[in-house]
Image 1 (cartoon, one colour):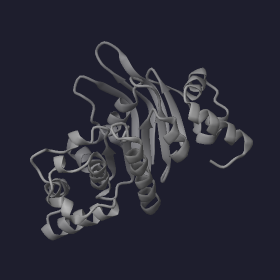
Image 2 (spheres, one colour):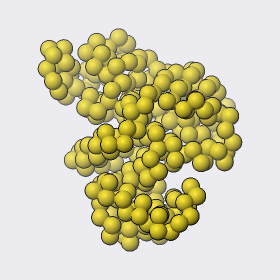
Image 3 (spheres, one colour):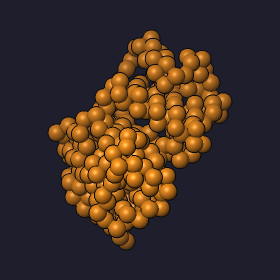
Image 4 (cartoon, helix red, strand yellow):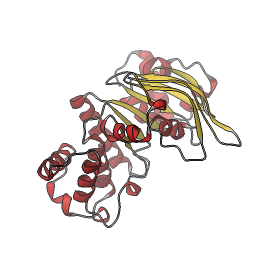
Length: 264
């Protein structure tokens, strides 16, 4: 579905992402793991052509056989939301304070040429219900929702037009552990129902262990190790991967279980 081949992201001063290659299949939960500043977010922004103007991207990015680097800005805007959707860490920044939740849904659909008002309303209601929220939230403003509710709305928006790929960038970082767990369980349930793939950007190995199928470890702009989750957790090859796993005590216990053949 998504193929990233020798992609680099550079400023005038330095190369921040350095010749990264990875591929994601349909329905896969692919975790991209690494410490802050390793280049994970910039790589994800390069996929959707959302990089800041001062950064340049080189290499090849193909999505469903389309060369994303060759698309016009208009074609790319049409693709984002319909086929590739983002869920951001700063979910609050995704909402305009003086617009209701209903107005956000309405505008999002208008941008993607859904002209019938009743269709837009019905789809907004269905989207809220799909993430366990009531229709009454459409009349509320973002500040009237809890953090967990607002992040659910952002997921509902991202899934509204049935995309093939969700890019989820540190989506639980701003939430407490219970709310974060509920959000990821929700995303896992919706993935099972709809079959979309997820590029899951995180530094939290607990979430990788629980949800991912495949993973790649990123350090200083490069992929240092990639493969099936259980294989890497039970037998990491790169020293950096070993250090990250060692620094996560709860993960260490899970790794021992994997090696013993215990289901986790």
